[in-house]
Length: 183
Image (cartoon, rainbow, N blue to C red):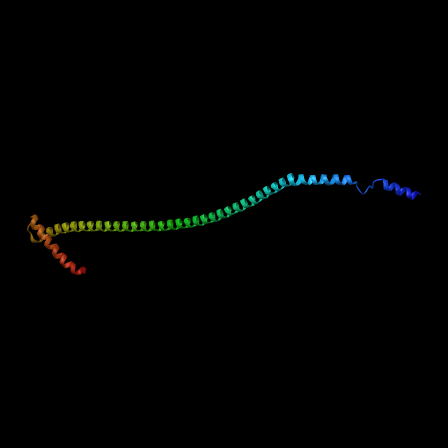
């Protein structure tokens, strides 16, 4: 009897595993209502946030790529400017060397001209001094010759015109005798 009583009791009592039909329907309606609210209100918000975040990330990536391209372009431009500056400095250095050489040559030419001028001036002075010494020697030689001739001849050769003519003749004879010896 016990078994029939347990069976009877089991049929009248609700099963702890199987829910009541009312609970299943109520749960199903609540689930559908929750599904409707999520699909109508929550899911579009999440989709909008997801799209916005995706756009921001893609925009950030595009900006980063653009910044990287700009940086690369700036690097290329910097390298080109650096190469140009190096070439310019080399050209300036070469120009300075060429100008220094030109100045050195000009100074050397000026020094040579000055040296030649000084030598020419010295030669001119020497020639003038030689001419002066020759004139003084001629005058002295002439005086001595006149004095000697006066003593030999015994007459006075003090007349200036006569003395000058005699001295000039004597010196011309002396030059003609010494000129062949010089050659």
